[in-house]
Length: 208
Image 1 (tube, rainbow, N blue to C red):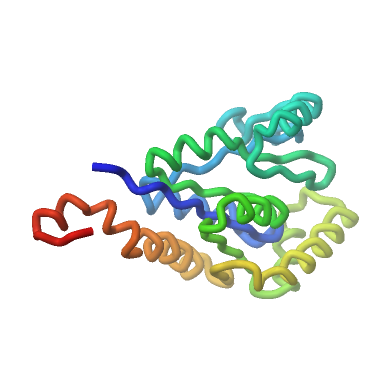
Image 2 (image 1 turned 90 degrees about the vertical axis):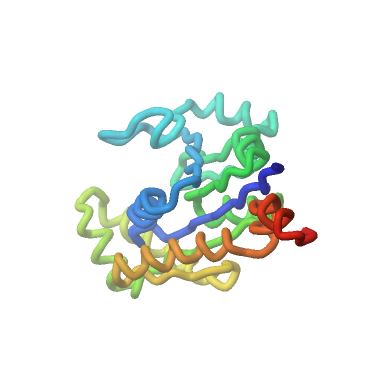
């Protein structure tokens, strides 16, 4: 039986909105979703593993890959490049795998241009005050960096109307349930289910 082509889920959020934790919870709850591992030129942080958290490469190699068309999307964020492998994405979609891209708004816009059927989700903080509290709670950034992240967050939130779904992370459990619901609703669409269950439908005498 022919597998349905996979779905691309694009998850975007301002820094500090809780995107990484929500994505981890989603992946634990929903099997069959492959998290894309981005390439980046930034240095690894403590505890990060090459090939698991990111593919860490130098700037020269990244720019060579840009010139070769190796990325379906790429962007420069806070002085570092980030990008998603085009070949990796195409191979998994052809195998019927669902893909999750945890990227920034620039990358999301590029992905939607290439894959207009991609499902986009924006994770929104409950307020700017709460977002600032979370950023300060990390105790890793300078005042200048925090101010920059807050300014960028306001710019990102201005684009919230471009997304298919909006999840407000005011309560982690509720936000996690909302994100899982987005994935499950897409998987239950008739177009995907007709392909996924073609044999069952054929045995029932139904034409698909």
